Image (cartoon, rainbow, N blue to C red; front, side, top):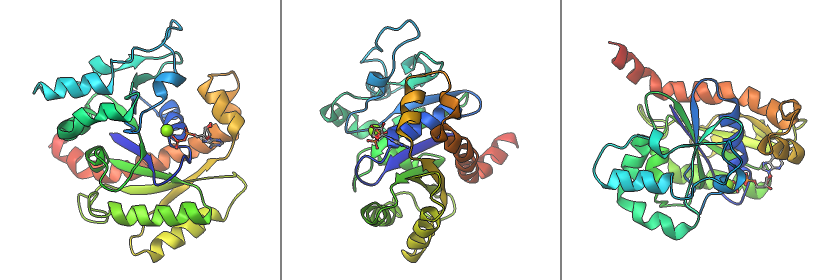
Length: 260
Ligand SMILES: Nc1ncnc2c1ncn2[C@@H]1O[C@H](COP(=O)(O)OP(=O)(O)O)[C@@H](O)[C@H]1O
Ligand SMILES: [Mg+2]
C-alpha cells in the first residue's frame, strides 16, 4: 500500500510525520521523498556505512526509467540507510521536477510495488501540483496540520480543492485523513478540527495527534537510544493503525479481486 503524507500550508512537520510512520510501520516498507519543492531526506540520512546517500539514485532515476517506457521497478532506485529503512531520495531543487511532468502517473504506480508498503513524503500540496497523481494513486492521503486558526483555515480550503482530484467520498476515491500536530495533552483540537471540516461539507476523519515534541523528533531522526520512549514516537504508535485502517478502505475491493 502507498500512504501519501502531505500538508496544506507552511511547515507543520510533514517530513517528520512521514519518517515517524515509516519507522514504526510493520513489515517491509520504504520511505519515499516525493516533495516537489526539494526534499531533505537525503540530507537527514546516511548510508549504513556512514557515507552520504547518492543524490541521483532515487526519484530522478525512477523518473528516467519510467520515461524510457518500462513499467519501472521501485527497488533499484531505493537506498538503504543507517537504522534499516530503505529510502527513495528526492530531488534537491524544485527545478529538477520539471522533467517528471508527464511521468508522474507512472511514478505513482511504481510507488505501489507488490512486495512492500511505501510511505511517501509529498510535501506541501498546492492547487494544481504536478505530483497530484501520487496522491490520487495512494491508498490513503494523510494531511498534517496545526490546529491554530490559520492552519485550520488552510486545511479546510485544501481539502475542498482536493475533493475533485481525489474523488473524495466517491466509491473508489482516495481516502483522506487528517493528523493534528499538537501537544499530547491537547484533547480538544482534534475534535474541533473534525467539526470544522464537517462544516465544510466533506467529512474527513481526524486520525489523531502527532505530538509536539522537538526532542523526540531529533532523537528519532538521529537514531538516538531511547528515542522510542518519546511522546513523539508514542503518538506515532497510535497513528499507525489508524492510517492503515484508512488505507485498507481503498485496498479492500481490489485485494478481494486479486485473491479470486
Ligand atoms: N511533532 C513535532 N514536534 C516538534 N517539532 C517538530 C515536529 N514535527 C516537526 N518538527 C520540527 O519542525 C520543523 C519542520 O519539520 P518538517 O518535518 O521538516 O516539516 P515539513 O516537512 O512540513 O516542512 C523541523 O525543525 C522539525 O524538527
Ligand atoms: Mg518536508
